[in-house]
Length: 291
Ligand SMILES: Nc1nc2c(ncn2[C@@H]2O[C@H](COP(=O)(O)OP(=O)(O)OP(=O)(O)O)[C@@H](O)[C@H]2O)c(=O)[nH]1
Image (cartoon, rainbow, N blue to C red):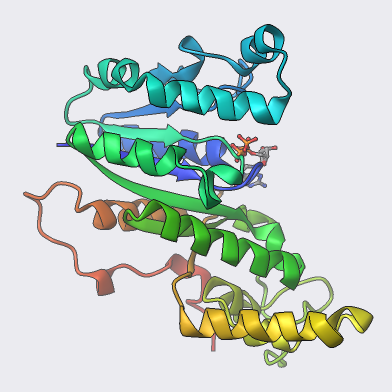
């Protein structure tokens, strides 16, 4: 059995960094892992490992922009459509990897996740090739600094999940940038105190609490029609609680291990091994000392 993890998420969410850390972790556990680069705009030194398969060997954004006189956005879409027309190239490139873990680093263009058919078609093709596939969707922990930005991230994750229809894990990346030190006594407010968030604050973002939106007090912004829009979003998230996030702190081996365990479980990696119970998997030590 071959396994593929699509590493998705908006630009700068940490996809390439996570792909490298993930590959290193699997290799240290003596598992065979390879990075597949599907970003035709990736710069030469984007990867610590040479990608085993690289879309830039088929087509690069630079060539499309210069030869077709296209801008960067149109050029990227052209590259993905070109790849879809050349799935036999990808199939051939992946053909040599049996019983391997393929870590597929996807581009950060948000259209790809919300409405473009590229990723659903790619996922169907991978499954047709007999590759068990799941996706992780990263959003940057800095989204937690602004609730409106955060909920736009939640909605983008929800939209991408619905669009892709494969097993799915949402990840809050760059948790090393978030201080989770508990404040002395008050853990009821969701506002950071002295610039530091409490663990309770963080849990309200990992399991998105729609009340964060309805309790927003941002001056004139939450009046009138904007307030109505927020209420509608709160209702949507309450009615469809599809999105929760696993925290990822790449400075902690344990945090990475927890994320990898969830990915393994989602794909039922190694069917011959003892099946894992979902309850055996927690979200690491973010809340261990809480309460
Ligand atoms: N502090 C911290 N920085 C990170 C982490 N992951 C990535 N970064 C930084 O965030 C920036 C973007 O990281 P990338 O891994 O290139 O993000 P990406 O999602 O692949 O970006 P695109 O391919 O452009 O969409 C880089 O400056 C990284 O060094 C992390 O876990 N912690």
